[in-house]
Image (tube, rainbow, N blue to C red; front, side, top):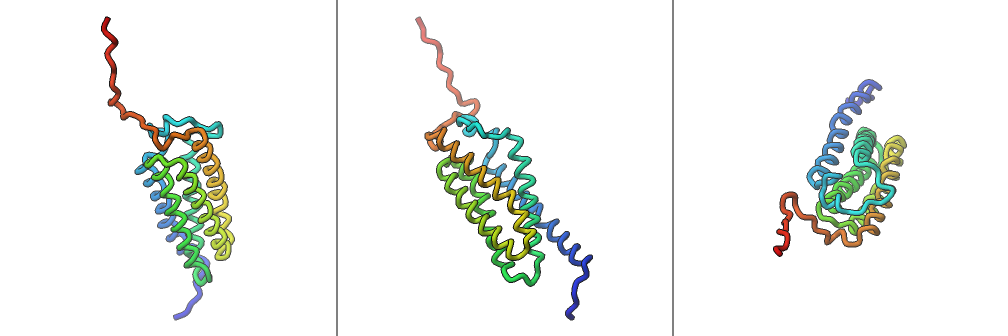
Length: 189
């Protein structure tokens, strides 16, 4: 039975996919961030010298909340583009770039790899750019939803590079655990 879906049916399909994919992308992003110990509470990160362009800590949570929602919506637009020629490739590319994106906080915050984190970010940016181009071939709206993410990745790469320049010893920086500080007794006369 070949019937064309009504506009209402198409909206409902989009809504169902959005209710699955948007929370999935958001939860993956924030789950990996939590797992890797990213953010201002990370003691190793607190010990690093910060670049002048470093935004306040709350800005990262706010920005990533919006970006993950937009990425999830972009993916939803592509997933619901039934019959689009490059749909399958676009979905695969999205998850490749998302996997690279999710590896960055583990690499930077968890493994303290500042230099490698910069190069990983360049890889994320390249993969996200290719994904955006293919998304544009499927649905223009999906590509436009990815543009703020690309802009943020450019900013993040500059920020990461500045961290690398300001902290050449970041990979070997050891910060004692809370409560593990040894207090030396004052010298006896």
